[in-house]
Length: 470
Image (tube, rainbow, N blue to C red; front, side):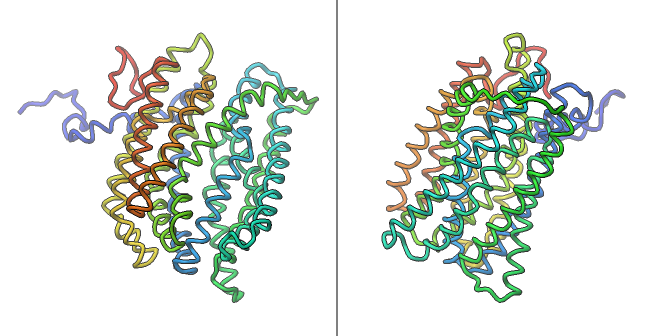
């Protein structure tokens, strides 16, 4: 067999699977070349990817420690309460955390610094006040319901509601940093610092002799959330003050809310959809079952973080290319993001299935019961990755209304399937319902993106002639 002198080692040695991975390797090579907006987006995605790898490991380790420290029952209580808080914290932003990403790059390009400064201040004040109102209402509802709630949930819920404004503030600071292409300042506080502080406060509680209960775990999470949000507020504010000149602020709440409310519906439905299975298991089954299912979902997060990493890096680039004169550029870039999402997700999915029983066993011997469900859930995540960050493309191109409708329909389907399958099949039913809803979601998003934006966001869709692969 003869080889040309111009053939590379990759061409000679790379197996078919590796050649399939060439879009990813080319992305890594190209990410650090050039200073155009596409290169910035690639760098943001890669930095976000690296942060999410580290954060996934830290979060996984912290949950293992928490599960072993509190035991299955109390860990299940903590999981149900804290998952509810994460959802409510995002919902309490009413879409402003993403509206900032939509408007800030536009104002920066137009040098409309009056509106930019107004947006930065208004977004933070709005989410803090709205989340405080939701928190007060939540505490009042828990006290009002009284005996209708299982007694072991009352105190953890009341404690958790106290940090809801900080969770929402952290979300809008994340969006502000992403809008300025600051991935480290956007993601590090929530995904690295907060779980590390959670571990530190848990260790302090253990040393101080506090009971290893769900309430103690929630207190540790609340303290970690307050510390993280306040530190992020100081850092991001200082950076913004240095970047944008001081001056008057112009508040344009009407156009901001016109965009934010549909995005609120989209992201609200998305968060509920992402966590619906955990919540439904919590409603129908005991905390022990919630604990096993959540441990399986946290193991699955080692795959799912790829999607969120790419999404974090490309949203502002979708917004920047949404002008009428950049349609071809937007379509090409959108197809590239699908490849960035799918192939790493496929590799991580295979690795998680290979090591799944061992990883679940770290939580405790009883958690290994979740391993069979992992196959169903991984299949759903990989399928979802095959269309890339399609909902971000819709949100950033003015199609947030139809995106909200899609997620509402899929959420309703997910809830109905869980209501039917969980009582009959338990945790297997929850996993099946989630995977089935994910299949419908991917199909609807792919169809609507093709109709509205003119791009077929599917990893195996043929590229246009002459289209770049990265």
